[in-house]
Length: 447
Image: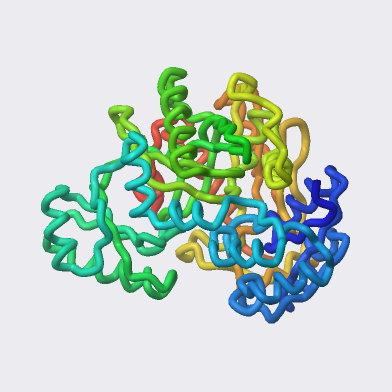
């Protein structure tokens, strides 16, 4: 087992990893930017090192600074959390050269699954259902338009290296295609330095269902059930829950087996997520694999009783999974609301500032993952998420009521948050009935 782990991240996920390490008796090193000097993760770790200015490119994305901090503190592993360098194969390769264990999958797997076009082809070869689309990369409008005609409209245009909703556009007619393709490609070049695109038939009103998988270095692969991530705005998730309200046991078993098959086909190791679209006829299609821990991993922990961060660390240390698929039991229902410092009434504009007063709820089945505190200055340089509120109860209606109660207790003064907006989603009759899809926000709330 590792004696010291450096966390190459910030905010609530860094705090989450530090706490897991503490419970395992592992020392921790936090890295922080100049803007995060007073951050909670820097205070909680056994050691903390400043790695650069506020800009992510000069701090949390600065591979040389992070590796230097790891060597200087004699840490033997790096946990990347999510975002930043968590899916950067070059960083993984550098870790290997420095004899530092990267807590995540190998570089070649990140490359294979990070390129969405190659990931599709891997799944097709493995017999995992995929949305009809291109098998080869698309670089220009003329080729794309020809392929779109063959696939059939509406068409989803996607950046091969994309993520977080960037580099994605829907073209419903041939007349729209050129403008949307060029805009998506431009966004991909700016965001990922990659002009590679691919096309899929757009699945109307789907649910976004993802399966959590764990795979060790000894060939064991299991799934931990699914999360329904359909409540999202512009491809950014707002609410996640487990299990999905509409999956039968038969369909859950079939999709779970497909997720395991997908992970095996990728040669996957560590924690990852297989993401599917589920249409109204209960047909499911692989869309991508996230080769890291997810923001919403906590809801899976609540329904399975497993600690995914600890499992990640054990797997990276070479241990075998201590349980089999038959040991995984889903109990009750869990829901997560992402708490963001943003103003929904002003097109979700980020609202950094000083937290002047703070109260989070507690009680049986209530969990808060956050790195803010009273007096904390939320910096303007990073993602606006300041916390995740999670609840667990015996069934979905009970979990919804518990979440509404918990949201009603949240007090974050000094900055504007999306708490009231989240409450509005939860009390909506369509959400409560479970009749939702990825278009729920756009259809039911005036942006």
